Length: 353
Ligand SMILES: Cc1cc2nc3c(=O)[nH]c(=O)nc-3n(C[C@H](O)[C@H](O)[C@H](O)COP(=O)(O)O)c2cc1C
Image (cartoon, rainbow, N blue to C red):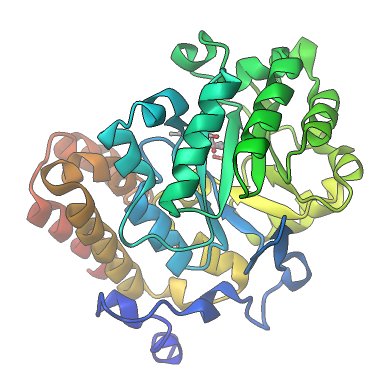
């Protein structure tokens, strides 16, 4: 049935040494939005498809990036990493962007506000040969980051943003891309002017999260403010981001904005098979497969993080259990749980009983 028709592609769920089946990154012929899913070129790099896993601090660690790639994501991005910490050779920061099971193509995302430090960090990352793209964070709303002039604060200092892109592009051969928001707040939506500046400075692709810094992660993404960006980008890819969680969103966003690619964030937390769904593969409907995905995810995190894996898995666990009839009670019961076997059993009961 559903499961057996994907036997080879899903072998990794039972056998960690199974090869990575790239066929899952190819859209199924039955995909309702087949015309929206396509290969994407960033500089000389060709992505197998245009569905991108968003960078999410505390969420998109190596295990989750690997899982989403295996379930169809064509490109993944690391959590934001401090350029300064990388230049100081912080083991924790370097380990965060590097993971043994890393799938490619993959971007390391850096944040900072000093062009020379950003360039030095990018060059160090390039030497490690762990990624294919250097992405520059120009959208983070967190006060600790913004206070230093980095993240979304750069949308208020476009000249500095341009200097950073130029310095990093000179320092590395890898394509340099940026991710920003639509503006600082409702009265300063400047994404079109900002995109012009970053393209002139040499950004090879642009991703825009359709919210302001002020909105943080709340409210509905304002896709209407993404109009006009594609015209500025020309042949360079424009990747749209914000509230993508269903196949029809690809159609609506592409129609409304002409975007080349789609970046998916919270929609795939607790639902990494969303990438398979967007590609038109149907195995994700099988609860037994969902259970195996859950198990694989937790085991990978145990290997990546050791004793801290279970607390770090919590954000995913609560995502997986979101549709549980007793979701609130379970969240309460499991919020201090540290035992992998209790968490595994909870997932098994939820998906298979
Ligand atoms: C917990 C969390 C952490 C995030 N961390 C980052 C980050 O490190 N770098 C970044 O560029 N964006 C980060 N973002 C923003 C996401 O990449 C994305 O732009 C945002 O969630 C909107 O997409 P969505 O509506 O699909 O979730 C983060 C978002 C969340 C929810």
